[in-house]
Structure formats: structure tokens, C-alpha cells
Image (cartoon, rainbow, N blue to C red; front, side, top):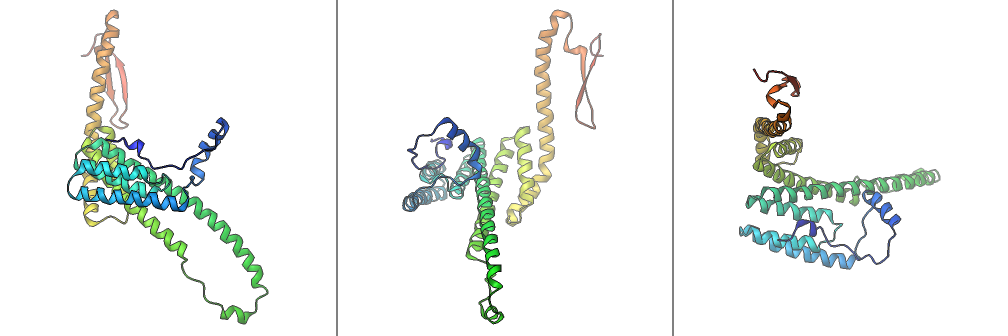
Length: 292
């Protein structure tokens, strides 16, 4: 199966050589500028090919052919222009859904995380673009104010009323809603995979995902019930996993310590770890005669 890191989207050819300084500067500005894009016709062609492959993958998923669906989704991601973060996020969220069906928890976490990260990059770019547009509109507004001073009151009254919402604003709101929808799906899939995989780190991560989901307004009733249930169950599971892993860690440290202390006639029995119930931290007490 193709590794997901190899299917992060197709990039335009870059024939212009770059110096080390160029690379350093560009790395620092990656989060602040829009990525290089394909020409419109080529972008449309690549996106169409990607969508065709995604449709095939959807059909395979519906037929419970999850391994084949993953392969086809990865093909869709590999030809999709790398800067189309939303389209790639949808594909990777779908890949996560396939891995969940196959009970491949680690792979599901990876794919869902890539989806969530891509949506985060998209939001940052959108915020930069919105700020740029607002500055331009403000500058244009100042010009309009100058013009209004010489327009008659009759002409002003007869002018058409300004639209309540521009097409750009409507498109931006739809995009925002789409991002929220895919983020909710990816978070639900990652949270479940983390919960199923278990372990202190994963259970704590699942708890954080469900807490974030609990603040989202676009969940279905079924998903919201799952979130509420998991937030009741997870804290005790997380605590138990933490205590188990801490106990195992201390056991390994004890074996190591005994090997080091033996030449000195000591053992770890001479040292007692005392837990502070208020803080959860530990302190060490020494006893010459060993544990009592």
C-alpha cells in the first residue's frame, strides 16, 4: 500500500533553481503566502481526475472493499493539486474511515490527523486572504467617502441599496461550514481510533478530541451522544492507563537501579517513592535498612 506521505498532492514543476538563501526564506514564509498553483486548465483537469478516483473509492467503500478503497483514495490524493487543502482533507478523512473499518487504529489516527492539519492550513490561508481583502475594501471605502461629498442628495437616494451579503461573503461562509463539517468527521474518527488503540497518550488525546467536539455546533444528535458518553467514560480509563504505565516504568527503573546499586551493597529497596495525592508528583525517601 502506498504510504500517505507520498500522496500529499501533486505539485507544479519548479524549473527555476533556488539558492540556499532562497530555500531558507521560503521555508520561513510558507505559512504566510499562497502556494504556487497550476494553470487553471491543468488544475481543473487534475481535480477532475482526482474526483473520478474518489468516486470509485466511495463505491468501493460502500461495497465494504476497504483495502481497495484506500488504494483508490490514495490515487485520488496523489493527483489532486497539493494546495487544494480542502479536497485533500476530505480524501484523507475518508481514508481514516476505511482504516477504522479495518480496525487499523494507528493508520486511522495518522490519516485523520493529516486531514485536520490540512484544514488548519486552509483556515490560516483564508484568514490571510480575508485580511487582505478587508484592507483593500477599506482603502476603496475611503475613496468612496471623498466621492460622496460631491454627489447630490437626490442621486444618493435614487442609488440602489447595497447588498446585505456579497457573493464572496456567501462563498466564504459556505467554505467555513464545509471545513467545520469535515473537521468534525475527522475528529470523530481520530478520537475513536485513539480510544480503541488505548494507552495513556492515546486515551488522553481521545479525551482532548472529544472535548473539542463537544464545543462544535454542527454535530448530529448521534455523534453528540457518542461525545457525551465518551467524556464520561474516558477520564477513568485515562487515569488507569497512566497508573499502569507509571507502574511499569518504575518496575523497569527498579531493575536498572538494582544493577547499578548492587556493587555498593544497596538496592532500590533502600529508596521509597512516595506519591503526593494532591499534586500527583513523587518524592524519594532513603532508608539504610531497606524497605520496612
